[in-house]
Image 1 (tube, rainbow, N blue to C red):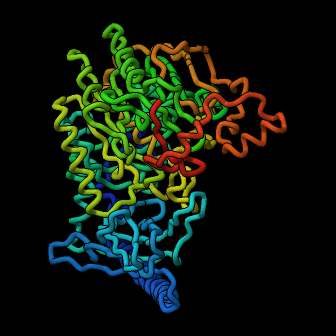
Image 2: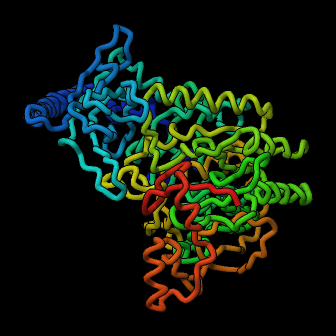
Image 3: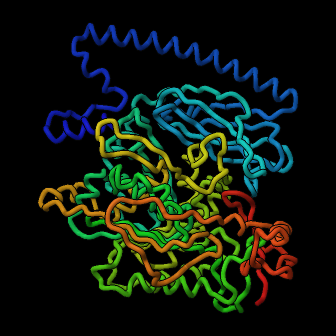
Length: 610
């Protein structure tokens, strides 16, 4: 962060000179040829020493793996693949073979260069659910990004929620050299420095194959998030993700609104945006406020920017052409009998655009139910897009259930390819240049190891975000209280589309007086998640100033009680009234129509006629 700030100041004063190359810039200070020769010799000696150490470490890990394999345990082997004479890197590809995989367990293969890079290898073995059902080896592929040292880590993920996800063996070190000198580095530099801003590209499928690389704080790139990490899109995307700092966000000269309609996963994007908007004192209570875990509607306005979150449980949307039904998640009904989520959601959507045009949002993120068993494109997506006013000049982002820390992009190459074909076909059929469909697995997989519960519990949480506290060492009034590279990057993407190209936006700031940066936050948040709420025109409570701790924390645990536990509590007087949202016994005996993982357990879905 300090490095980025220093470079910005140097650029503004004209003192900063762009380096000639990310990896060769270190030599520009050695102007004396003798000094250059001496330094090169030192580098060569260091390289030989490190290569020797690395090869020794490789042999130790190989011996560990072979012993494990001989005893029938799970381990992996690394197979470097040599390309042709035009390959940018040697090796050109790394294959990771997981041997003796436990049937029905999945494996997360991550490649890291500490402080510089993190990414994942894609499962190439054709497996329908991403795991081996017969104990046959699983093969994953990874392609190098730049020359240097990396480590391969393989974590085992069993079927039990809450279990740890241990490494199957110690990390395996690899060294990537240049193939054609400078070719790979030049391509990476071109992607970093010469691409147009993504928000200027008019391709509806721009984000429907999310491909690129996460580069770490050691690079000190200008377009970085507050943690120093940068997502650099692949040349196939052909653009760059721009980032806006807190000062720029609080100085927006005209009114902008970003609306997010989704699940708790998408709530993380809302919270990251709020975290970027507010100063340390204003957001000190974010985790404990009504906004921290809202199952209704919440909004924050700072200066000229308003961000809004609306809980939008699309997996419970009905088929409007069929009779209504009771829906139970485990032992609880999730909505009032006879109510219609699809009707309420339609009213919420209409509410957004029934205002004056000046009050329309600049950007909307709408989660679609693709990936849920009840998803019907013709009822759950197409009608919402069709209702967009022709005069609206904003951008509609569509997400889906594959955008998930729990799913983590753990799919095979064939599954991923089929998913991409599906979402590209759907976004094309909408025939609206204002719409973009976000590739869920593509975004979710690269930072899989750094979601809410980190590497000891990979894919054990739906969420990418987590509460934290990181104080800014240089600015006493700034801090980070929502930690997540993924949701912050998504927030920056939405900001880019709301604000336009960064260079033009910063130029407008110079010509505009600073707005008043007053803060207002509003909420209409139910005390408990269940029953789900999609309420149009909610009565919002608004507060001016810093976020405050909510007045009470409801005990919602009773809503998760099994029928037996509920019966016992009634006998002891601890449960005075019969729970009106308890799933009827007759419905509990009906077949399960769907199941999914929550933050605490597996949810079994039943649907019964009213």
